[in-house]
Length: 175
Image (cartoon, rainbow, N blue to C red; front, side, top):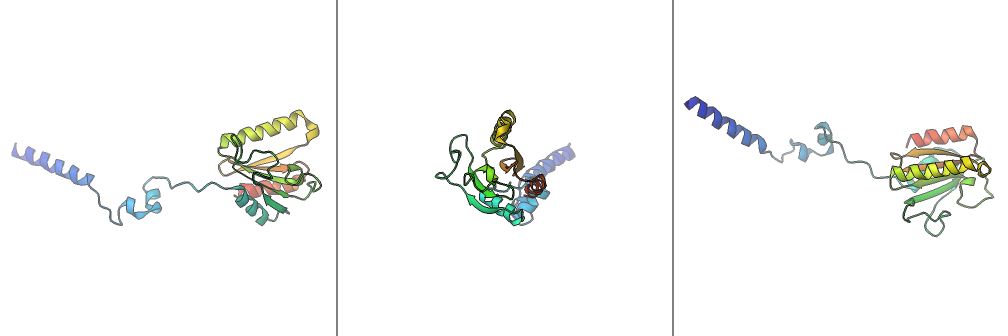
C-alpha cells in the first residue's frame, strides 16, 4: 500500500514538473523561428508582394521591359486601385511587341501587374478579363501568370510574341 502511494505521488510530481518549462535558450519559444520550424510549427508567411517589387524583379530578369511605372489613384486607367473590390497596387511597362502608341498605362503596351487582396479576387479579375476577350475577340488576347500564392496577376498583351510571353511566365514562376 505504501509503495502505491509513493508511486502516485511521484507520478503527480513528475507531471507537474513536466508542465513547467523554462525560458532558457534551449526552449523552443526562446530559440526563434528555426526552433519553431524544427518543433513542427510553421514559420510566419513572407510579407505580400506589391506591384513595384514584382516590376523590379521582372525588369531585372532582362525581358526587355521599359518605361516601367507604378500607378496611383490619379493615373490608374481602371479606377480600381485602393477601391472596394479593387487591387491594392498596380504597375505597368512596355514590352517588345506591345503598342507604345496606346494609352500610357494600358495592357496594349505589353505588361500590367495587379496585386489583389486575396487569391479569389485575382481569380475573379483574371476570369472576367479572359471571358470578355473570349466573347469579344476583336479586343485581343492576354497571357495571365500568377505569383505570391495567386494574389499577383501578371498580364501580358497578346501582341507580345509567344516566346517572350514564355520568358515572362518563367520569370513570374521564379518570384
